[in-house]
Length: 530
Image 1: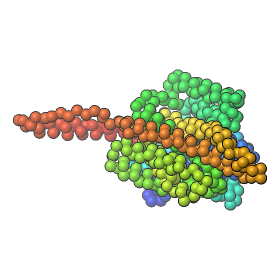
Image 2: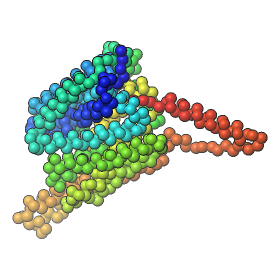
Image 3: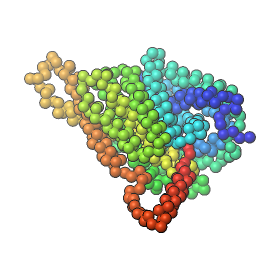
Image 4: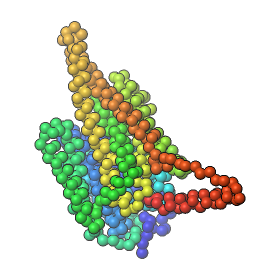
């Protein structure tokens, strides 16, 4: 027998919803590393920060690698067996991270955690979609909850590391996974989702090539600055390896009867424009690195206070989610909602540009972080919806892994790398410009040390302010693009005048009603269900 739900029939519906929410709250924020405790990992293991940045990218790469095959894996195993095994494995991997001091183990476990996390997530998508019914409203509720939980997890990872040590949060996460595994062994049904399908149709070599392509790319992003980019043989070799791996991956898809990836959807207009907007979303999300350098390096915040800044985004995230639910319920055009998201991000950048001073107060963070939270959540919902709109299920699953990696890894990684490079160059230039004040008349030998610190802090502020200035200029260009893009609407409309003679007006109205009904049916048939 088959059962498309998750739990036994005797489990009340409110309890089922509660269990799904618990799974989302634990599984979605889980990762190999947490941005809130990277500094504690560095001090605790003695490894370079770049290894943990690499591991952070690896989680997203693992999720993208699993996406094209996740539905086949879902249909191959019984729901309870698969879910319990995955939760146990996630708990074990978190325990491994808690007990190791080798940075490469963090990279490997992060990749596996991302792969397994996506298998769990797909089990939650379908029941929630069935409950909500509207894909846009589902995105509004889902992304609001997940983005808020990610900020909470990053904060408590930093808080646990400060109160106890960095291992404790991994142990806490591991225990939660084991408890959830026990609960779901009791409440989940022991049936297949649908007709059992074989796994031998999965091309594992393509998965390895996919992982190889983006893991080598992540190595370049993470270690590029530390190894001085093209002056390093490791960076050059990793870049070549990433290019060769992607070329082999693309060639292999052309020779397979059942390809792992499909590039057909990238010829569609909405996918191309959606990827373009996701790229510029990465420009705003990449500001997290320069925001951290300002908060920690200039203002002197500790890691818990810095992680608390992300908590300030949660009100903006919630507001964006509420607006999204009503927006999609009323079936309004996406243009102004996407415009408001980019406008919120630009508002954040403008406030930060004019706030780059040593006297910056903690109270001044509330408005920019609210705008950043609103912009991030609204763009995650609306641009993702627009990119995947009007795609068939097979097309979407065959390419969504690439889109996911593009949104969360490639675009953010490119801009984070550019910001770190520009920040270093601008600081060198700023120190040279400020050197005019470093002479015997304005800085006496007794005050050299104190003034050197002030000059260094001002150099960081100048560099960060320049970067935000360029972001604002580019963001205004993105706003102009959004306001002029059609978003699938008809660009031109011709009006036909109907002569009200001899009863022709009645015929015309009937034909218009029939035509409208037909268009609605076609539109409903083309709408995908994730």
